Image (cartoon, rainbow, N blue to C red; front, side):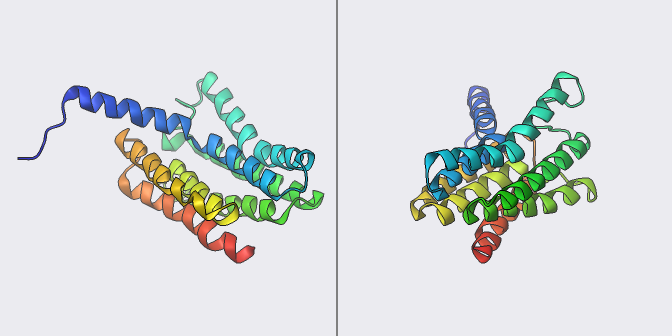
Length: 205
């Protein structure tokens, strides 16, 4: 007979899933990745801080600030913008802000690794936005960013970051466990992230 999960076990797994979803949110992972790659690719700490803050500000800090303000004003339910119909403006703001940040980094002469990385983020968003808005399908941005982050760290920083790949899988599990996404939406998000940083990023480098 298959084992039956007890109510307490289900509640515990839901709490773990919520913690994973919140701690490893796209905003957190994007900021950490960009700051880390800026540090890894810059000639000195001052340059690393400058490039990292520009990149993280455009791709993470500004979009999440916009989203949090929207939550406080009642425009969407939570910081993850769980309702697909509410995702139009946040996604477009994220895409525009990240693209502008990429342009600023290019004009300012940022390190090539950082430029290529944020360019791949723009490419991934260029896939996720129309899928969400035009096809009306809620592709998982958590899975996209988690998979993309794990692959990017492995490609750009060290092969030892292959150890982070199970963490990306954990993020995907959390989204399905919380019923914020289906398994297909998580797999589609992860595939987009892997294509952006595992295929496009090495090609551009």
